[in-house]
Length: 257
Image (tube, rainbow, N blue to C red):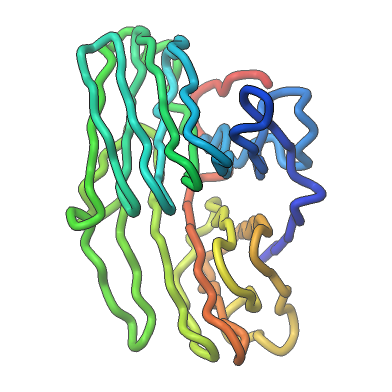
């Protein structure tokens, strides 16, 4: 098992306007400078924060499956499919951009959000009509493993369906608690630490290969054999993770960054 932590200094930076929106990018676009260029079909991941209300004007997309997860605040959306919507804390907007669409986004003051791009087989995806779907926080099932809460976002029992091979969870681990889950051979966990700090390790080897991670870090764990991964919160603070599982390789050509 390979566990690697990338600090914010190893992530790309971005902004909109005159800095009304600032971004850390665990996975950036080409030539933006992030150490991690992709994780399998996980193509892009940005953590955006708005310092004031700001609209990103209409711009085009095609092929990619683009998910916006609102960590805090409000995000507005309008597109050339006729949608004009808003989503608030804990909600998600997702566009499967298919043959192409334009959209615009407005972040309210002090909003924080993730924008994440998944890459299906693009030559097939661009033949499908584009779609837009939106989900409020209450539409996501929350499961409990002891004191740990797991918001299921993509995968079994979760409402969002994408073409790319993806599972996604928002995990809240209380101080001192642990959360373990399987990592199948040939897959990776890509994790952004949203709050707190803790240790990531191979289950059963916590004292041997544990790697520390804190707020803002990007953790990528991969394996060539089936293993369980343990996420343990430090004793003095909770540990919140947004976790995405993807294959490290796919059986279709990926876009060359």
